[in-house]
Amino acid sequence: MPEKFKNRESLPQEPEQESKDENLWLITPEQFENLPDGTELISINGDKVVKGEDYIDQDTRGGYLAFGFPESNKPDNIKFGEHALVDKEFVTKSREAREHVEKLETEITEIMEGRLEAMVDSLFDKLGPNAHKPNVLRMIAEKAKKMALDLESSQETE
Image 1 (cartoon, one colour):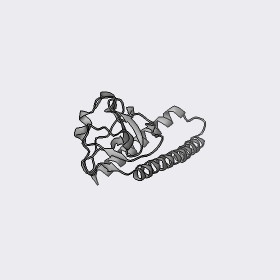
Image 2: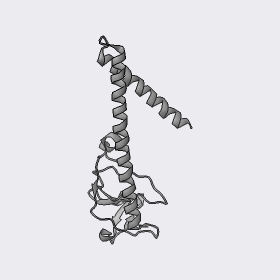
Image 3: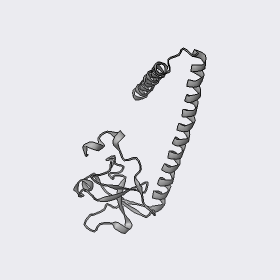
Image 4: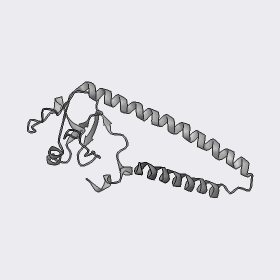
């Protein structure tokens, strides 16, 4: 994997969306390794990615990556397995589900940011005019970070 994609924070934020969904021929990790950089693939969500440029998750299900070639661009030099074909209806539903989840995540973030802002404003009202805002905000951020790490740690042990 290219160095720039080892850190998930540097992943491309918006993969290019294919204009239409169609049947998708999935590839194995071995087939992926043999593809030259610059090869365009489509995810089961309908997103276009480019090998060597974009992050391509190497998780497999049934021996296949969640990436492959659309029916209209299926290479003749790759032998696809009998279970490699994903129906275009699945691709469409998968893309629609991902878009719905992204919309919900955005809405939740906006709600939480509004609540956090209201809580901080309320806290400053209670602390009065002598409160040093940068120090208080730093303390809040440190506490929130500790709480997030504690939560993450407790979920890993379950």
